[in-house]
Length: 276
Length: 264
Image 1 (cartoon, rainbow over the protein chains, first blue to last red):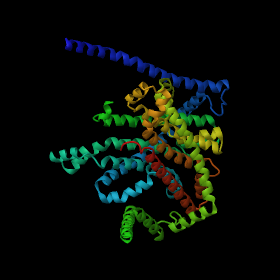
Image 2: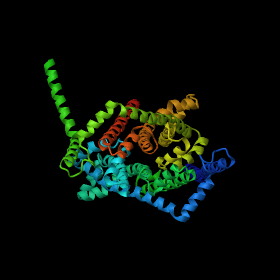
Image 3: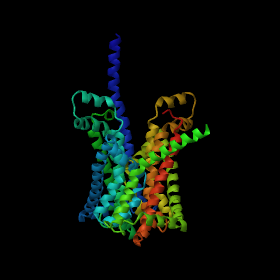
C-alpha cells in the first residue's frame, strides 16, 4: 500500500514537474526578449520622434544601415577580424606562457621564488599605463599591440593556474602513483584536470581584460580595427560611426565570451559543476 | 630581561628583513639587469633610461607639484565614478535578486553589456559629454557598474533560502530581510565584484586620459611620451603602477576587515 502510494505520488510529481517548470521559463524568456525589443524600439523611435538628439543617439536603423554599408564594402570584417586577431593572439600567447609558469611555480621552489613577487606586485598594477613604453620599444603596429595584450592577460592566468595547481588534494595523486603512474602522467592525467576549473576561470578573467586592452591600443595607435575606426569616427563627430562600432563590439564581445563559456562547459563535462 | 627581549627582537627583525629581502630579490635582479642593459649599451639609453635618472625625474615631478596635482585629478575622477558604480550596483543587484519583475527587466541588459569591453565606450562618452571631467566619470561609472551588479546578484542568489524564510517567519519585513540577511550574506561576492571594479576603474581612468583629457596622470604620460621626454614618462608610469598596486592592497585589507565576522 505504502509503496503503491509512493510510486503513484512519485509519478504524479514527475508528470507535473515537467509542464510546471516549462511555462515559467517560457515567461522568463519572452519577457527578457521583450525587454530587448522594447529597448531597441525606444532607441529607434526616441531618435525619430525627437525625444533624443539624433547626434547624441542616432536611430538604430541609421546605425544598422551604416553597418550594412560597411559590411558590403568589407570594412566591418576587416575591423572585426583585426580586433579579434590581436585579442586572441595576445591572449593565447599569455595562456601559453602563463599556464606552464603557473604549474612550474607550484612544482618548483626556485621558479616560485623568482615569479611569486613579480606576480604579486604586477597583478594589481594597471598594466595599460605601460602602453607608451611598449609603443616606444616596439613601434605602433601589431607587435606592440599584441605584446600589450599578452602583458595584460598574463597575470590573471598565471595567478589562477598557480592557485589551482598548488595545495591540491593528495589522495588522487597518491592513488595514481600507487597505480604506477609516472610523474608526467600524473601531471597530465591528475594535476592539470584537477586545476582545470581554476585555470579556465583565470582565462575567463583574462579574455575580457585582453579585449579592453586591444580596443584601447587600437584607439591610441590608430589604424584599422574596431577601436581605431571608432575613435576616428568620434574625432570627426560621426556619431553614427561610433554607434556602429559599439554594436559591432557588443556582438564581438558577446560571441567571444560565450564561446569561452561553451568551451568551459565542454571541457568540464566530467566535473560536478556541470550537473547544476 | 629587557636586554634579552630587545636582543631576540633584534634578531627576529634581522630575520624578517633578510626573509623579506630574499622574497623580493627577483625584483632587485630585474632592476640590476635593467641597469646593466643600459650601462653596457646593449639597449640605447633613449629606450631604457637609467634608474637613477628615472628616480630623479620622479622626485622632480613630485617636488614641483605637477605629478601630485594630476594624480589628484585622476583619482578624483576614478573615485567618484567608482563610488557611484558601487552604490548603484549594489542596490541594483539586491533588487534584481529580491524581486522577480526587476530581475526580468534588468537581466537581459546586463547579459548583453557584460561581455562588452568597456573601453569601447570612450568615443561615446566623448560625443555625449565632451572632453571634461563628466565624460570620464560617466565612463568609469559604466565600466565599473556591471561587475558590482553581477557580483551582488550572484552573492544574493547564493544565500541559503532557509535563512531568508526563517527571518521572514520571525516577522522581518522584506526590506529588513535584504538589509539583515541578504546584504551580509552576499558580502564576499560583493567585495570581489568591487575589487574587479577597482581594477577596471584604473584601466579606464588611464586609458581615457590617454585619449581624451587635458590633465590627469594618463595625459601626463602621453604628453611626456609625445614630447620624447622618456625618463620622466617612465617615472610617471611607475608612479601610476605603484598607486594602482597600493589601492588594491588597501582595498584587500579593508575587505578582510569587512569579512572578519565570518568563520574562517
